[in-house]
Picture 1: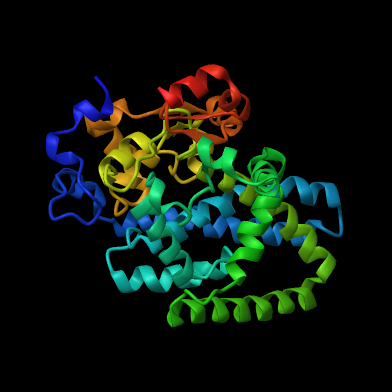
Picture 2 (picture 1 turned 30 degrees about the horizontal axis):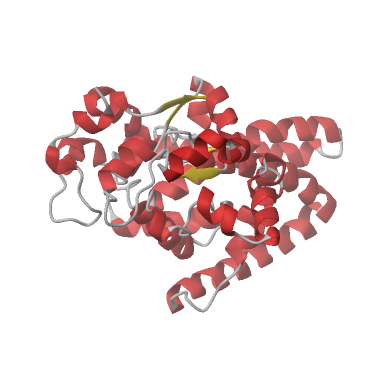
Length: 351
């Protein structure tokens, strides 16, 4: 039985439709608990700050020990980002106002403007898997036909962007350091203001830290940690929707629940990695109901049989998924560049 057949007929609803049959089923898991949220916060941001203090103290003693300590620190930064993520969804605390206040505070820790990221991520949830609405908070993905029709320069840029050596090294720096600093004319005034205020506050804070501990120590601590946490974050975001049998449909055929259950993976990580990634590997649950806080995702998955038929990726399978580059509309799957050139693939597209 597939995930699709396990759903009732009415489950394939559009986002924002008048009836969501899963809302009542998942409602108990979408209720934040103050005790769990405070524990989540305490086991994320507090260790992150404590380890950074330890790195400052270690820096004059040993650069190598400092760099070694940046590994668990990066893990707690990633875990802190999940708190920020849940606040943006309004799922971390019971109060909408409390989520906004906490989210805006954590925004300075994760270098990301709260309002701008919240808007972009909401667009991602509303359009994930929709071929006609690509480009809103997703990994740029071409169809085979689009790639073949593209110019030489466009194909080169796409190849470079999708190469793991670029995607997971330069990508995290762009995603965490550069892109959140930028605005465009399409942004609403309040969103641009969020970016400007965050940038200004970060500039003041970073300048103060550099004066306090020295710019060399600041860079020694921040650069490796941000790149590691960012690289892990980009990888997680990539494999959540980029796997062979993922879901892409044109707007007329696209359905929110189908995109959640068929186009969002269950990345089954070792427990320690699941802990540091804040259960975000249970992405199928999160996309079906973004109001479920990260600490309830596992229970929601375990208790509801519909989630037991979703695409499952191991860590190794997730790493191998980075080979996939193009959406083949004839075969309804992601393929590698070489598979897109194969005669059998071409025949399937023209059949």
